[in-house]
Image 1 (tube, protein in one colour):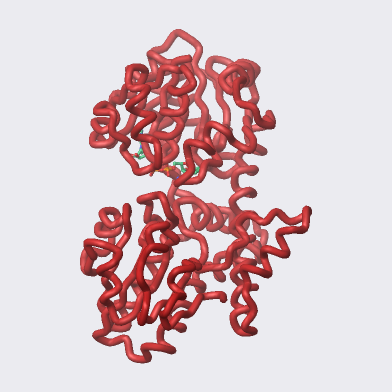
Image 2 (cartoon, rainbow, N blue to C red):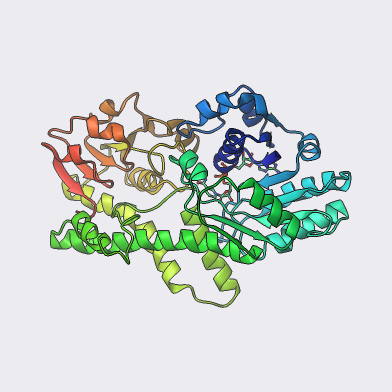
Length: 421
Ligand SMILES: NC(=O)c1ccc[n+]([C@@H]2O[C@H](COP(=O)([O-])OP(=O)(O)OC[C@H]3O[C@@H](n4cnc5c(N)ncnc54)[C@H](O)[C@@H]3O)[C@@H](O)[C@H]2O)c1
């Protein structure tokens, strides 16, 4: 099939390159010319393990452009993969989705052949059949589900293992209200050997939010239990190993630590809370999930101050800036509240991350960035905020280490505190 992908970020880039790998022709569109140029030079616009290689391998069937007109005219399906960040009140900002859909609609107006628009961006139930449909219909003068297909196909990939997650997903969710989109997407995904759920558009949209909200809840629950275990001198990791052995309880996402970050969990939980409020529902569990998550990184500073009571003019080393290992994404990274609070307390921060220093520097140009993980160890004390494998190879002897991510090696010969253990 000929597929266009709007948005060449973490989801769009992976989606397009994986479809190319599966034998489809892919046209990327982005408003950022640097991303377009990168793809056309066979360089991944984001860091994701294996993506550069797969992009180069499928170069012949991939092209990128800022010209949406050509991309829509020459393809049969468009995946909308633009960002849906948070507004300041936590609600979802649909500016990019709306603008993308208005642009698609303008091209559909001039297109004779049938076309399908698939929303892969994470949007609240009601968005695709509401704002998306309205924008497409107004700009095209055509009717959704009749003159063009419309569907929701939420994405569940995890940064850092996105290629494997996309190619071998746990499930594929397709929400549609027209046979054409249902049939075409069924064909597109026919080679995927996983459970597939075809449902309505609002159910598909809600499945994505509930999945993320549940995983976020598991993490905050693990952290709350971890905080109790810490006070009792109990190893929380062993507790969750035992708990996870119950077949009714999946062991995944039960690691205590300093909480969840990234571009999805925090903003999706916030968006669901805001939606609940709009509907006059008090989402008490979700609010507490967020609250526990906001407090959790600051527990590291309480532990740090036990060993370094006055942080004024102290140099604090920070290992890890990405929200998780194997990505350069720093959106809602747990390193951010740590840096903010350390600076507020008058400390200087010496940070290192194997991939994310460039992105973090744009947010915090005022902190020091170390040339290597080793050089962070010169600081007065060290905080570990991301579980990069490299951090298992350092010599932490005689250092004060506050560990948010359970790096085994950090305990050897150091003055060591684990956040929940
Ligand atoms: N990152 C993840 O792990 C992940 C996983 C599942 C779902 N999602 C969801 O997928 C969506 C995209 O997330 P992301 O992390 O890839 O975002 P991103 O910010 O990395 O990428 C979005 C891209 O869209 C581009 N863009 C904005 N407006 C555009 C327009 N009108 N036309 C073309 N391109 C445009 C931006 O320039 C950017 O390159 C979000 O809704 C997110 O919640 C993300």
